[in-house]
Image 1: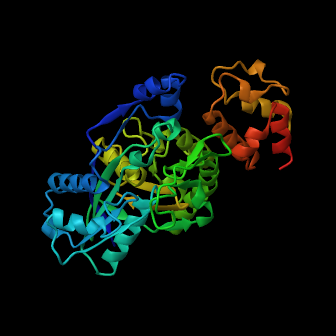
Image 2: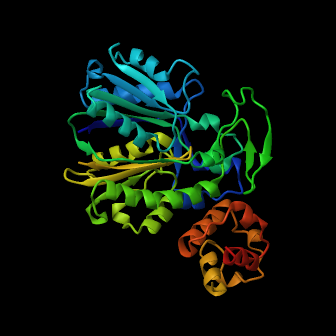
Image 3: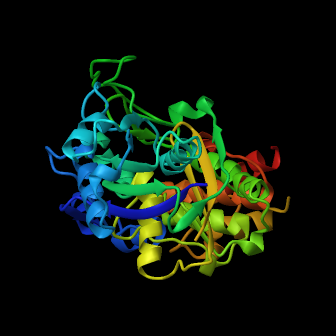
Length: 332
Length: 75
């Protein structure tokens, strides 16, 4: 069996509020954005601050908060779509920077909003197989660097941040059985096209998509309608599958902590799944959508404010870029 | 599908537009209140109330409320 032993997170110092967007786009109504999207401010990484830097800070905070020595860590994995280099894995750099023993395994994996769930599934596998005893799972993202300055829709949603989670054979929350899914047919719906092997050089090319949004090769593109339809299809089904796979009924779930995509999407999902407001966490007001870190940040907030207490069953789920999704139950 | 019920659902997606202003011949994308979030709201209610899928492109291709109703009805 595998358990979450501790969670911490780190947000970059620079904060950008909705008022900054309204200054740039005067036709926008700040109050309406906050009401619908649920984000009043986001943290933005500095020019020379990478996802690796944020992950290091999150890890150091975890070590301090839970009195963990880096010497205890025997596996490091980093979920990011903003690695420091093409190679090596940023996780290898972090092993060294954090003073984790050279006997530890380390690798990066490239996922977005489902990344926290996949990381927990991998960590549980490593613990259960006896390959590792203390897995440091890091999630870090700096999507702000992928956003075009004129892309007000995505700028109003995404915030940068990192989280660190320790998974061990004992701890605060037992990790349940997983449901995972993938549909690469939807890869085009959320993509940064240039910069990697398929399209190495920036093209400067832009076109207009079916919703009227500008679609740049060199910046993050999201087809909001397609992602929204995918989410409304995949997540309610996944919720049922997670219950079945863990032999549980809906009334046994004390709290749902889903990926904090945006308030509008979460409110719609909650209604479709017929879940009471008081059992469904929604708060991304001061962080924005932090991609793979959002579930960990939400869990940490719930633990700190005692919204999650011992004895509670919490369903967590991630969904987005890939398309990729996953969910499980945490038994506190 | 009932167009009156459809219009009621559609009107709920607009915050500052009086529901009585939304009629079959209303050019809904020309309303001052229209935004990309309104389109998301349409996608959501078409999916949740009618169990159908409409794309952003289909919504954009509609001129009037009646056009939108026709597309959703025919799905």
